[in-house]
Length: 486
Ligand code: ADP
Ligand code: ZN
Ligand code: MG
Image (cartoon, rainbow, N blue to C red):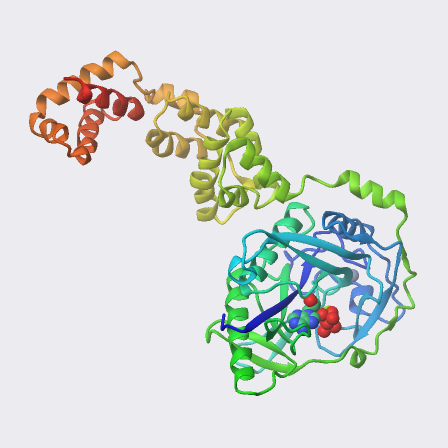
């Protein structure tokens, strides 16, 4: 970044909680129905309807709070935040007041060495996480003449997580958001779908001169529905602030939206002050009390945290960070991988299949691991056959895996039926290598004269002679031995 300036960023993330029902009524919390199917007097805000707090949403908030080592507040309260919008039938949103259920936690993320001056983790404080309800959705017709309101989402539980202004670059903001995303998905409290808005991020950003203690004027950037947009929008916004400050102009405190097609942020509105919402305590809901037993129960139920799991896999299986992070993408995917790794006895082999053929199949079909047709035990057997070199990888990928996908049996019987077992008898391979060397005196002489690159050609000839059934690794070994002789 332009020397002399430092960016300051704080994230506000809205996490849609995967509860069975909505926040204050028994309507289903799901997006799979025609517009306005999941509504009732409570979420429509009809007169006289009374909200009842969803205990599952409270447990999910506790889970998140404990995972970021926050203080769980014994008593927090609900407030009404009042504004008018067509998708808000009550005319107010129920949210939490000055005290939130979760306060003062933190996330440790990799710092951006370019702005921190050194490698290493940095601690990003989580100021608070509070429970609130979502609004409905407005759909605007393309002709610009009419709009439709769908209230299936009205009253769906949200956990708003407010981060302290501890981030110092767009890269750090994106890394922090990724870490938080892995966390809420790994905890099983959110499906993490950013495009559909289950995980929404607003970023507040300001710029100040290096060494200055006071923060600069901040701008809130909305509409950041991918990690890439977070990076691009913040980099753009930081640069815009620096230009203004260099010109001696002031940054306006406002809300801006990221326009992905133009690649820039655009002003949307000046920021409301909290006072404009006329917040007041929600008279229809008692304060939310959490007793120590509830906190303890949530602590006991806490699953292994994604960052820990990633580290454990790296230690146990020697996986790279990116690989382990991708494998930890969802609790179901992680569990599947773990089952394959354990049963096949090869974490590395299991990882390669999960990140390769399995992911490709899921992507092509647009489905999740939950509906993957091959059971982890069966997948493990395939991995084991390849790892023990009974089956070549090519044959496994092209001739066995597709048959298993189509429900055509287990790996061992497919290998037997199709006669795919590899030849890994050293003497058989030695004999074939000897034949190939005799038949190719030219290349052999060139290799011995130092042209190592021709070795692949000879390997290919041997494999071809073996009709693709030779253990390629062994062929390489035997060929090198033979070439090294006399
Ligand atoms: P609001 O009431 O407008 O939501 P908050 O005090 O809750 O304001 O802060 C919202 C977010 O803005 C937080 O994530 C916080 O970290 C961030 N933030 C506050 N001040 C600054 C600043 N000067 N620069 C960048 N981010 C900031
Ligand atoms: Zn309802
Ligand atoms: Mg806020």
